[in-house]
Image (cartoon, rainbow, N blue to C red; front, side, top):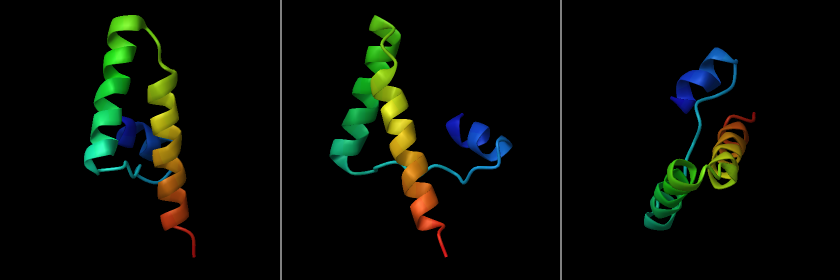
Length: 59
C-alpha cells in the first residue's frame, strides 16, 4: 500500500530494510499501530524507506 501511495505522489518506490532485524521492526511497528494506536514506529519506518529510495535514486 505504501508503494502505491508513494508512486501516486510522485515519489520513488520505498526501500525497506529486509534484514531479519528490519522485518522484525516492521512487524513490531504494525503490532503497535494495531494494538495501541501508536503510529510513530511505523511512520519512522516509512520515512527511513523513503530516504533509502531517494538516496538510491540520486544521480
